[in-house]
Figure (cartoon, one colour):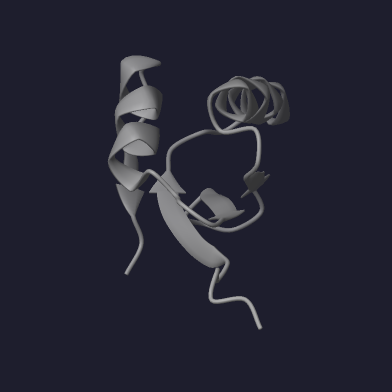
Length: 75
């Protein structure tokens, strides 16, 4: 039995366009290749969802902010 649990982290963003979301997902995958990453732009919070074993929350928030986007962990 494995003790390695998958975590899910959900972020509120201000990403508006599908093209922007696709580019961000590609860039995040280059930094975190084992994580599953996707956006839900239909949600009013413009959700970024990351699923993985060792999610680096602070690095993800910092990366999006460096790209000019708002990003915060959704509680």
